[in-house]
Structure formats: C-alpha cells, structure tokens
Length: 115
Length: 113
Picture (cartoon, each protein chain N blue to C red):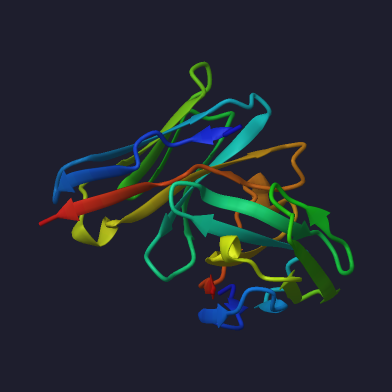
C-alpha cells in the first residue's frame, strides 16, 4: 500500500512566521505535489516536482517555495505566513505514466491556521 | 478560469437510491478523468477513472460516464449508502500536462438512512 505522510495534522502559526510543511512517501514515486484545499475552490496546485531537486510552479505558487532534496521527501515552505494562507494543505505523489491514469496518492492533510 | 467545473456544491439522496454527480470541462486536451472521494480531515482517495477513448467504466456500485462531445462526465452510485457521504472531486489530466491533475470544486454528497 502506498503511504504518504505529512508531518503535522494541525498547525497554528503567527503572521510573518516561516512555516515548513513536510511530506514523505514510501513508494519510490518520482512525482510529488502540493495542493491547498479551500471551501468552494476545490484543490489548487501550488507546486510539483517530477524528480529530485526539480520543481515546477503550479497554479498558485505566490508566497510559497518548495524543496526536494531526496526522492521520498517534498517540503512546502511559507516564507512569511499570512492569514490568507490559512487552509488545508495536501501532499500527493504518483508514478509517471502509471497506466496513463495519473492517479495520485494523497496524504491526510495539514490544517494550517495563521493568526 | 475554471477548466473543470462541478456546478452542484451539494446533493442529498436517500439510502438505496441512485446518486448522480456531474462534472463539466472546457479543455479539449484532457484525455483522462478521475473521481476522488474525500472525508473530513482525511486526504482524497481515488475512486474510479475513465480514459477519453471510452464512454463508460464500471467498478461495483460506481460507474463513470463520459460524453466527449458535451465535455461532460458523471459519476453514478447505485445503490447509495450512508458511508458514501463525503465530498467528491472530479479531476482531469492532459497528455501534455506533465501528469498534473486539474480538480473541480467538489460536490458534497449526503446519503440519509
């Protein structure tokens, strides 16, 4: 079974703090993704990575950065947290070309609140 | 611009009846479509998918229908069960899209006993 874990289920931070969200997958997947989920907006892609040290911007990268130093780990960084970054953050991974389904496996999510 | 749309934010159905969740898309480059189910405080889990070369895919109680000319897909759940109560997301990927998924806004399904 694929397992994607996220370092925290709930996190409360202050405005201006630097925030690190960690994601680890145990199935040797090349692709990893960070999304945020907000009511009425669905899942929106922040950043993704298709290999170690590679990263690509998604649809809403502003205010975020990422790091992928090892294949199994993909970190999302909020350089200076703001209240509009209060959200549910979801990490996912996938194998390139997996049956052409592009199925992604998700972690449990981190509910971040910025005060 | 919202390339994948789920126009019904919520749907209520009685146990044992059919649930039909709808999804529309605008990008003609999409060639694979997926449905995910999400319970509160959990990550989405994959439910069923369909390739653009097919018009129907069935897996137990779940069937997805694709109408390419209308750029419309639907998920049918028969019979619906209370445990099906969750948010359902439609997602699409394009062969040129670097395996990215574009998600709809979700439909909250409530199945009452």
